[in-house]
Image 1 (cartoon, rainbow, N blue to C red):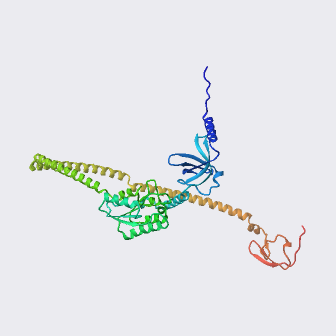
Image 2: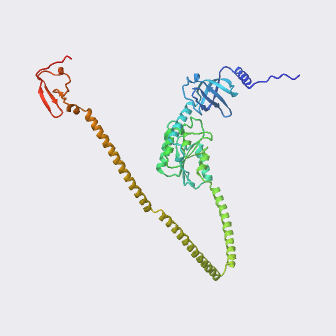
Length: 447
């Protein structure tokens, strides 16, 4: 008999795994990490990942929980969250359901860093079109840093090893603490006023976000942006990024790397030049020998000038004959085309067509005149008929039969005697002429 198998559906599997996860942890745990992949859909929920150097976990913070946030979460911000461990069954994805969130450690500084970075980015301070190229062979290199730090010693050591012919000017400034940002700004402006350097290195050693904060100040960023001398930033370690790094014309991960970036390697240059010299010498020697051999061989194969002249003369005569034949044929061909087009043009002479149109217009003009005369006669007959009809039914015809039209002082037609009053003036019009009279007596006919 076949063994009975308990087969899990994916939905059942994810549901039971979620139950195991949620039962294996307290209802709420605290977790710390950096926000990434932040998403805010229209539902009002927040989805993001929390990560550290080695791992990350998906998180969901629903609208009912994030309405109590006192800050706006952003990518790159380190936060402390209170959350429950769960599993999103739809994708089988392990996640945290975040109940509350607050900035962790340098969260406030990180927020300020991101806000300033975004604002300067929108202003265009990080744009590539503002980046200046570095000089290939700088005569003098300026270093803006602490005169007692390890960074300046590393830079001087690297420059002395790679490019000892360059001069170095150190602009001493404090690289952390109150007022350091203003002094760094003054040093950049002073170097631009004095114009004694071909490139500037802005540098210091590593440290925390608070230690590097002078290089995140807006005044430093704007001083770098307005500098006409190219600026290379070499601040902290490779993982450290400051606002100055984004504004600078080039960024180096360390102070030593900044020194290597601005200085050519003299030993490597000398070795490269020696190799180029050797290759060029060998190539020129080989080319000269090859050209000498070619000249010797060509001089032996060079024909006599009289033979070349005879061939050129014969070729010239041949070309002249061919040219004359081509011209004669071309002229004959074009003359035939001209005659053919002339015949076509004569057959399509507009004067002939114009005479036909003139005859047609004359015929149309006679037809138009006949049509107009017929119409005039018809309208005259109709007008006579209407005139006779008007006379028959018009008031003048009535007056001709012995009737008269009586009007009062206001020219109103009098149809009844009671429309008048005694001593009123009336006008009586006959078929020919009219009279004005005064009413002496009114007889009202009852019928």
